[in-house]
Image 1 (cartoon, rainbow, N blue to C red):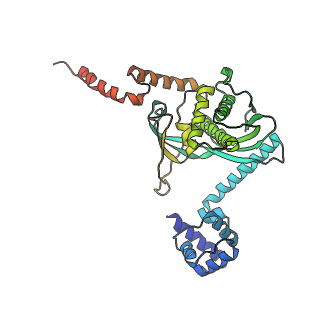
Image 2 (tube, helix red, strand yellow):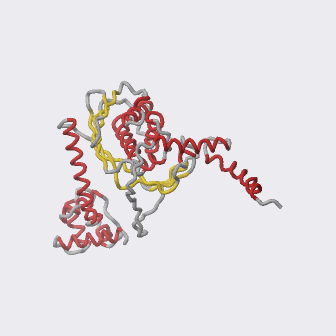
Image 3 (spheres, one colour):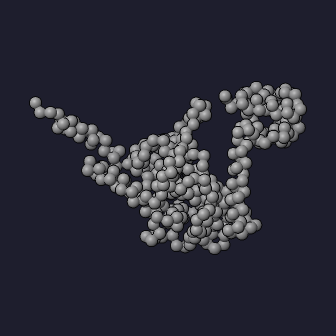
Length: 355
């Protein structure tokens, strides 16, 4: 059903439940009594009651307070109530844990970065190909507040505290394959872009399973990038740049030769196509698709497999693909397509039976 029709049904039901006649004149009058902006017209009220439009959030809030209904339920229906309650509890618990770790009476900022799913294009990103990917509705969340220690201190729920001295951002061989390496690398990358880093305390909680294929590592990199961008960049960098910073930290500091798909899907969000023909300037395009409107759902199943700590195996794949491309005289397999086409005919001739 169209969302405007569904909203109208909920608005009408809420007016009846609150004891009001369902009419544009009543809605116009009662709303304008409580609204401090430009009064709405009878035509606007009629549109809300007849599936023509949905009010913006500020007006929705006024409607919800008048009709004594949660604004998210009025806007999206009962099915979101549990989800909203769960999210509120997540962030409340996050702030509580931050205060337990770093102390109370701190003004914190809240952040989120989602996991991602790969719809098509496995291992094509680092070969200058194209991918189809999307963010998912599980995420990492963080609370952050300044400290006076000139250190980035990051505590992830269930893990040890990581501390980065902001005066020492050089890569360290002994830190490869560690969270500390990613943090140091991202701090270095933002410093190179002009960030004036200062002490910061961060507490992170996540419902993105580690090693499950939905890119918990990329979500972590993007989350840290979003925080550093918000707190320390005068001229904010784009979501694409945040993804590239995460990839650079993973390549150079962490020691994993990953592509850019995972970070890009998390940072940009929704469903996107990415063309990596020019890796320094990937072409990112949104894909306008609504699974619910089509009666579909993208489901991610837990296979029980864990691919954490597979950096060497991942590197072997990229190295082998690079070696094949080099044999064909190219830096990446995407550029080797013509060479493969030229080889096809001689191979087919060689496979024909004699006579």
